[in-house]
Structures are given as structure tokens and as C-alpha cells.
Image 1 (tube, one colour):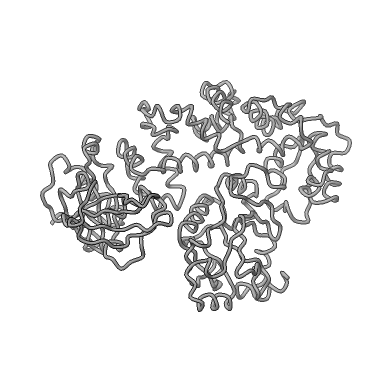
Image 2: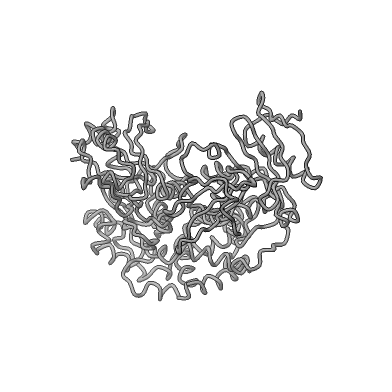
Length: 435
Length: 164
């Protein structure tokens, strides 16, 4: 089916498309048009992309880390207006597109904007659409359909796909379970493990030459999920070979080398401690190895709530004291430079709120007051940015919220005991209270 | 707010909010209202402004789900923007606001109090500069209006401001 598509899809360069179809990483909604789920010209599934990622630099876990917090409800076909247009894709090929408008399309656009720092650089404004073959495009256009529903279009639950493989399906509620691929931090967390090159294909035929960290992880590697994640039986064999002759601890968190503890154990330990449980109790009920599991203990929304609790008692005390860097704003005590850097760093925010970049002092605070919801967006984006730097380690993230990303990296390099920092202590207490 | 029928100049479609139509009700006194019906079928005012474009802007700000109608009406071709952050806290508490409304090369700055226009400054883009026709502005608002004009010139990518 895919071979067929190579000849016809998106114009001139079938090899280019084959690469996209086979290796691309995509978050989007599967679409059916009048009951047909695949394009008649090439068999590729109809879909409405939320974001197309650069698989060489965007790890599925990073994408999922953000996607799982988004309300990825499928677009409402009845309330989605459609228009017909053609545009050039980033390779200059002509694409027949059904352009989506309305609330759901706006949501799609919002979701796309959340991933602005990922994917390929783009010079054009992204528009929600479904690309279709020319015949379908002509038929639908001639039918006079004004809404997706009238055109017989329906949307499925959002999916994170790597090539043809669905890594994750997102339902109406935010999802907190992990996609079944090795965690990005696994690559750095292994004891005596060599670094994985960027070009190494996690999902493809090339297996991961990594030793297991613990007996629990080794057992998990032999389960169905483990085999799937590690590239099949051959992959598991490679892992077994890499671990051969090594005496492994039953669980990570015990007898780990200092470096490994820094990378992985802290995240696990903190997640457990902050959730009100010890690391050992948090993993004891499962065969899944600790590093694979630690991210599931981390909750972006919970983190935001805990930070708001520490900074302003959830918005009750927002009269922040002036500092040499300005006066913080709102329930997350966002500093002026944080607000402006976050706006500057996101195309969508810069387009909408760019004038905030020239404001200072009270003017910026009033601007924030006048743009209700902007505070939430900035806190959310800023937290995602910190998470990206500290791999969902609540302790480091809390420290970075207070001291900045560079400040945290410097503190870590100098061997500062972050857990004993008063802000982190306060945060831990708040985080453990959050549900 | 109770409005008698004889106070209404016209009612026209204004957009959609959560699947419900929103109407633009123009009053004879010059005030524009955005109205919709609540669950019980009662009229509900979503916002009020002296200028249709400002009304559209403020309703969009307050109700992010609001979808302005794609109509030929003049107001929705205009670009409205708020500059109220330049006003002092006292003036803001008294209900003052500053808006700019751009129609092509013409940009009007409106100082309003409780949604009623109290002052207007007209300007136009000429040779990459914003040329401003100076007119009377309440003394306490001069600084804020000046900042608003500068901000608009800056955000429009203009070289600067010239006073006519």
C-alpha cells in the first residue's frame, strides 16, 4: 500500500515522501471522509496534522510529555467550517487541502503552537487542514459542503505516530501514561552506558545496544511490552548480551553509581518522595523498571498547582515585593524577563502579544492584567521549557523556577545540594499535598 | 441594563459564541452592544463599546470562543487594539481605556470612560511615519496617549511619529 503511495503522493519526489511516511513523527487526528480512511490515490491515511516533528531531534517522549497535558479532543465536525485551497508544502510540492475553520480548528492551531519549539523551522503561518487527493478535493468542493460534517468528514482520537506505527492514542482527557518506547532519559541513565547517537533509530530495525540497569528492568525486557520497546527478541538479546556478566541491583535507587544517581535516581526518588511515597514503594508493585516508570509519577498540572501554591498561595497573595530584576506578576510570580522571554520564544505568542516586549514595570503588569489567560499560557510554556531541560525532575524544575535554568545548571555543576534549598523544601511540601 | 425598543437603531449579526448567534445592537446614542441569549432565552449583554471594532476586540478578549461573523460590515475589517496598560491604576479603576482602531492607513486613538468615548485623536501612516493630528486630550491622560501612539507606531513597523 505504501509502495503504491510513493508514486503518487505529494507530487515530484516519491523518495522524499517515502522517507516522510516511513520515518516521520507526527501528532494528529486520523480522519475519515465519507467512510474512507485512506486516500484512494496512494492509500495513505487521511489525517489532520497537529504537528509534524523532526524525528532526528524531537524524541517521542518529549512530544508525549507535552501532548499528554493537552485536551486533544477530536474536532467537532458539525462546528468545523471547511474551505478549499492549495498550498505549497515545505518542499515546494502542491498540496490540495481542506482548510479547517471554527473553534475546533482554533484549538488545533493552539495545540500546534504549543509545539512551536519542536519540528522543522517554518516561514509560514500554519493552518489546520486535511490534505487530500485532487479528485476528492474536487468532489467535495463541488458538493458545496460548508462544514466537515456536511462533507462526510469525521475525526478520530489524536494519535502520536512514528511512521506507520501508532505510539500513543490520546482520548478526551489528558493522558498520563507513557508511550511504549524507551524513555529519553533511559539513554543517559544507564550504568556505564555509552551515549546514543542522535541518528540511532529507536523504532526502526536498529536495536539499542544498552545494558539493563536492574534485575527488574531485565525482567521487564523479556515481557511483551519490553520486547516491543527494545526492538523485538533480537533487541532484547542485544540488551542481555550488553549486560552479560554484570551483577545488577534488584531495583535502581540502590547501589547506583553517583553519576547514574544524578541522572536517573534523583528523578525517581524525588517523584516518589514528592508523591508522598518512598522510591522503593513507588516501584515495588510493578515489574517495569524504575527509569521507564519515573516520568509517569511526574504531573505537569500538579507541578503548576504546587508552584502557584508556593508562589502566591494559589493566587491569594499576588502583591509581590519588588526586586532588582523587577516585580513578579500573578499567581506564579512570573518575572518580567520570564514573561518577555517566553513571548519572544514562541512565534504564536510573539505575533499576538509582541508589544509586551517593549513594556516595562507597571505597564507590563497591567498588560498582563488586561490579557486574561496569558499568565496561564506563559506559566505553562515556561514550565514546559524547564521540563525540557531537566527531564521532568520535580526538584530541579522547582529550583529552576526559582533560580532560573542557568542558575540551576550552575548550582548542579558546583555540587549544591538542591534538595536542601528553602524554596525546594517549601515546594516539596506543597507538591506532596497536591492531588 | 434595560434598553427600550425605541432606543435601538439597528440589530445585525455579529458572530457566534459557543454555537449561539451573537448580535450587534446599535443604540441611537452611539453605543454598540454585543448581545446573545442565555439558556433561558433572555438577552445577555456580552460587551459594550462606542466603536464596533473596539466592541469586537473586547468581546474576543473576554470570550476567547467568540467567532466574529465574516460579514461585509465595516467594523470587522478594522483592527482594534488596547493600550490601556499605559494608563495609571487610578484612571483604570475609574473605567478609562485607550484603544486604537486601524482602517488601512488611518489610525484613530480613542480614550474612553465606562465604554463612552471622551476623546479621539486621528492619525495616518504617511511615508513610513505616523502623522498625528493633535487634538484636545484630558491632561491626566496625555502621557498614556503619547505612549499608545508610540506603541502603535512601533508595532506597525513605522520609523517614528510626526505631529501635524
